[in-house]
Structure formats: structure tokens, C-alpha cells
Length: 227
Image 1 (spheres, rainbow, N blue to C red):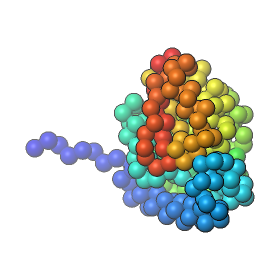
Image 2 (image 1 turned 90 degrees about the horizontal axis):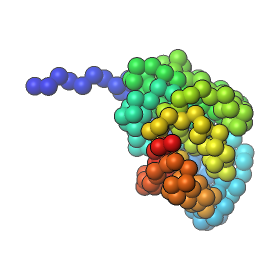
Image 3 (image 1 turned 90 degrees about the vertical axis):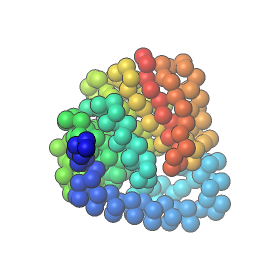
């Protein structure tokens, strides 16, 4: 009989407890936002995040689904990611999955950026509760400034903040990417129009990426950098 697999960090009771609470909060807040919009799905597809009052986003726990989180974790483990950059930390759901992967890869750092002070504070508290603070640096402010001094090499990038900033943040980080780095961009189907230029560029082959759209959650653009 083969030996049993070693337990992973995402199976840690503390991590599972925090994730359950945050995923429940996400579903509640997402339902509240959709209920606030007339013809919600069409409004989001047409106008992107501009369709929603900024105050709703500022206070809402909007994170990845459990399936998306596990994809983050598995991908980061598969490529042995040690340095991960996250644009749009919110309350830290995706950050927990990424930090768990870094820990299970033997150590490293997830560098996150969050523009809302309450969310940044909440993310730090959630990461501490999950026992993962040592693997994360959540920076408060505009990501175009907070992520400007990232050291090379970057193994993995998650884009899940304001959609209009995906391309500027990507341009900021491309010089730091190692060959074979993975970039995941969330919501490419949910915010199809807003993210069409991003998807077109990533799939064009003009900037060193091989890329495909994955139908999970609001849609991931899954891209591998070849330099």
C-alpha cells in the first residue's frame, strides 16, 4: 500500500474554518449587489464594475469560489511558486489559498495589494486567524504604487481587482516574471466587455504569453509566460 499523502495546509482546521466563513460572506454580499441592480447580469456584462455603486464594493466581501480557490492552490503547487503577487486582496479569500500553497511549497511570500483600508485590515486579521500571516505581505494603497517595487522572480500573479487596471498592473509586473510564470485573471466572462482588450492581448501572442479562457466561476484567463 502506498504511503498516505501528507496533509496540506488547506486541510488545516483553522484554514478551513476561515474559508467557510468568508465564502458564506461572499455569497451573501454578491446576492445583495445583484439585487441592487436592475437587470443585474446585463448591467455587469455591459458596464463592468461601473454598474455597481463604489460603496457596495468598498464594503463587500467578494472573493473567489471554493473551486477557483482550489485551482489557485493546485496551480501554485504545481509550478512550485515561491513569490506570488495578488492584485485585489479584498478580505483575503484568494490570499489564503495562495499562502497555503506557498507554505506547502516550502516557504515564500504572497504580496497582495488592497486599496480599501477596512478590507486590508480584515484580510490581515483573517490571515492571522488562519495561521498564515508569516507568508503574506498585504499592502494598502493603489496597486500601481504598492506593487512597483516587487523583486524578481515572480512565479504567479492573480489579477482580481478593478478590471480597468488589469493591463497596467500586468505591464508593471511582466519584467519581474520568470519564464513559465502563471497569470490568472478573474471575471473574464462576468465582465466580458471590460476585459475584452485584456483577453485579446493575452491570446494574441504579442506579449510572450500562451493563454486560454477557463469556464470556472466568473471565468479565469489562464496565461503562461514564455518571455
